[in-house]
Length: 393
Image 1 (cartoon, rainbow, N blue to C red):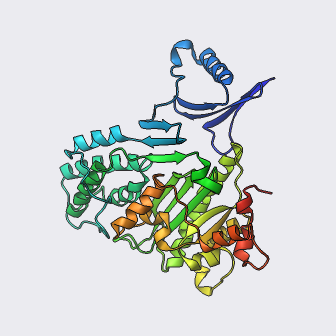
Image 2 (cartoon, one colour):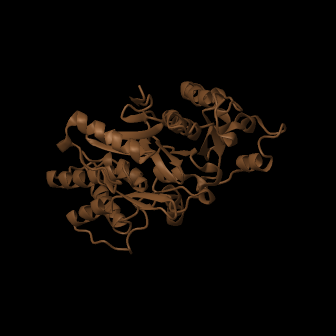
Image 3 (cartoon, rainbow, N blue to C red):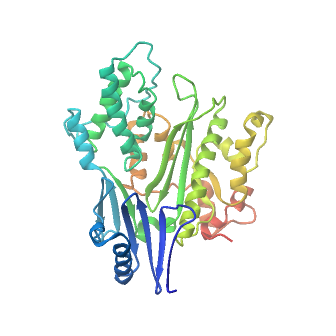
């Protein structure tokens, strides 16, 4: 009667255990469990119940996690930071493919501005196997602790059936990039002076590259969701349809990002961190205006359903699209191989939590300056006034 344990609605692999006024959140992956107890008493009670159910010899651990699913966890309690990385896995990968660890390596994962096309020749079975092994490892890194190689892993993954010599050169390029960033990981922050008003608040960035696929001319969607200075969710994905205009490709990407944010908003709410209207940074002014109902055109009729989906999320106060310059849009590195290596490094450092800086747009600056939204602000700013408040009605 004094305890209960139940799965969250948003994620059935995440559980909340409450006992005698104490609380423990637990995340399960097959037979691995990570828990965050509010007190030593509930930790001991949780472990006691697990041993009673599964058996004493089947429950191990109980210490602060240092590795989970191959990811290393480093804490700096003085600076209030937590970093997850996979330096050991990267070193094994480099050794397997004969690449030496070096600080003078490639500055970004792919050749600047590269666009791979389908190979008209025929790759050997040996080359296919070598290529698939490398790309498979890239994809594992890309979904765990290395969002900076997500676009490279996705692009190279499209050519596993018949890799071209050019694609195989790019595999070596990625390996040489990893050789210079072996221990790079995602850092999350907890200090108020670092995070400011963004503490425990979701903030996202979305972008697309029109016709980015050299073979199909389909566009690439990219987004990243940040929390407390580091990335928690990201994606670089080729779109399923061929867009004929930049705004169309951007809206498809915004819709994909919005669906992910709906899940994360609900999950954060169940943990007790209710989110207001989540800021989504977007560098296409037309997409921002359409999403907020400020612009309509017959030219959008062929992707009207996607437009209405994004517009509905904005009208319901779930998300709001903030117009930012392209060089400040973090998602740029998820949609293309950037031609400016310094720009890539700048965005990578933000996403990885090395420099947890959030760009202040004109819209955000106006809200901060007026301590909210003044009656003369445009409709977009009035719609997102609750973002600064942080709580839903």
